[in-house]
Length: 231
Image (cartoon, rainbow, N blue to C red; front, side):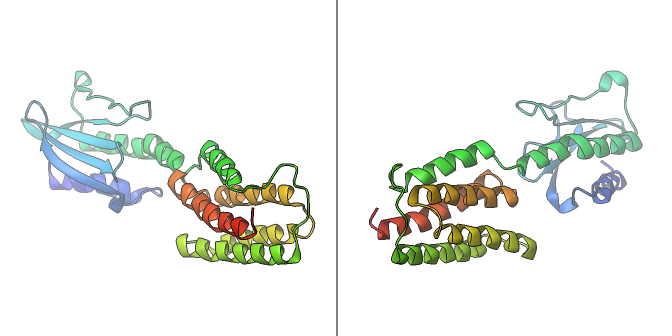
């Protein structure tokens, strides 16, 4: 494939407001019929855009790309429609970036609320507070749990890169959690704790893996605090 054609493809990516050339890696090889192909792959994902060059002319091109469908199939070349020039291929790449790949990346960044709900249920099961335990926390218990809340905040800041705006939102939620110790019984406070962690994960739009990290920090910190209180 001509270098000026490859450069045109990179210019399409660089002109996108959604992606950067560093998000992709390339590979030049031959297809099953020994025709030269140029493959553009998005990070380590299954999404790729492939350009095929005609054996008799670098200016006759075709393309195929990954579709946003179960199994991420390839669209297939369109040789029945004839060969294309580089302008047509660039238009196809732009459409693919703005639609198929954009939607794929957006879905990657959507938090898995079902997974977080399951994690929240797991978090709750680690706290051995009886459902009928509606007694209030003692002064010493409140002190220990407030230490745990501060520990959770410190662990959170160490693990996640957050903006000042997000940190203020998180601090507001944690202050509410700490204040709830003075007005809620043990069982009701546990519910507020779970909803607080769930709310932080949602507010930061954490993906599945990062959401698991957050829940694991919460389980470790607060489960330890509850055990220290003898539950």
